[in-house]
Amino acid sequence: MIANKEMITWLLHDSGQSIAAIAKGSDMAWSTVADLKKNVSKVDKMSFENAAKLTKYAEQIK
Image 1 (cartoon, rainbow, N blue to C red):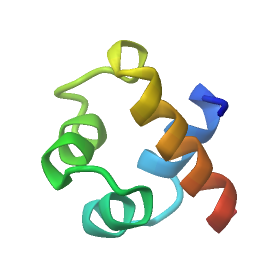
Image 2 (cartoon, one colour):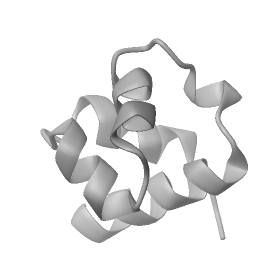
Image 3 (tube, rainbow, N blue to C red):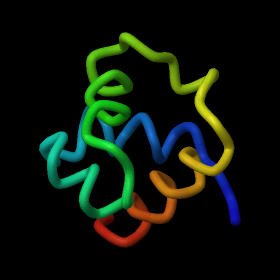
């Protein structure tokens, strides 16, 4: 399991993926992804488990 902040940032802000698509593809709650995408929650403060899920999904779609 790895977590990559740059990949997560790309996924949330530059990939063109919707909140729903990211939530479904990474198996995370829609509200968690929405908070990260809208900068309500900070990527630096997220759990490693969620960071790993987002990194894995970003690698799959890149």
